[in-house]
Image 1: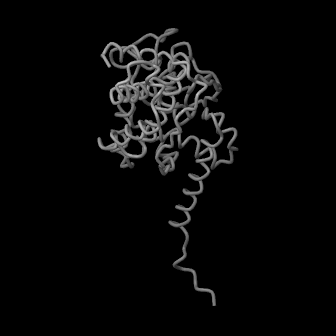
Image 2: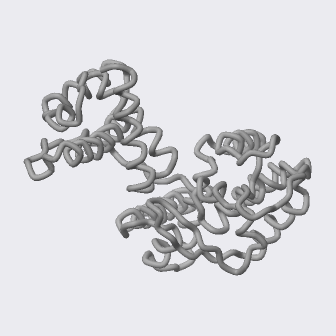
Image 3: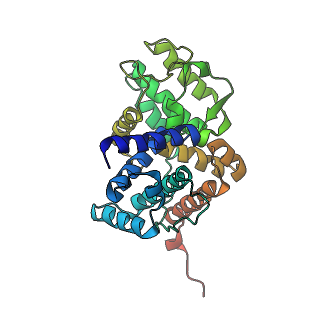
Length: 303
């Protein structure tokens, strides 16, 4: 396949993912990369040739990817991207009514989310703002939105000047364009307002709320680096990431007695199954507490 033909294929695929499916920029990049690798591997030159790819071709492709060192979790993500890409190709080729190849991804063991404690969440957010610079206040405001409102980092960084000053609730456009209303606590409102007052850039409609040093929209990498520095200073494990604050939001609500359906709506999960994992987190944390605190060594054996 020529470079131009490949570029044309991927341009159509990008437009479908962004405009048709409304996937996140991160997901679009990953799906484009997988599709590009498949086109190179199969050397397809038309949508009909892509649509004719069989299960054995996919198995060969994944075997090739494994030879490059990818693990089960990455292979599973690539399988998901391939299924979506092949379905699109079949539509473009006009063969959507024919039987699609049956694809089964590798089994992966899902790990439990690793939330941080409430004190650790606040300590992380406050330490990134120790210098009291506008960038420190910016990062603290972002982390407060993750922990205090359960936002994904991409959702927080997608906010614009239109969204402030924050009210008691905020409308968020999440994955797939699904909207939800999240309550905003007073400390979160205050952290965002403090950042807005300190920012050297005007807070304007249609412009990014959280900005980098040059005025562009703040990147996820900058927030992750700030959290990594604070995590090391506090002696927290590597699992204490920005996304862990969202896990903490959900776990702490569950521990306080909030029902799963409400947590699902606050997180913007498409299915309740995605939210139910937090019941396992809560049980695991309870068991850890029991094991560390139960005085079993002092209990006399029962006769």
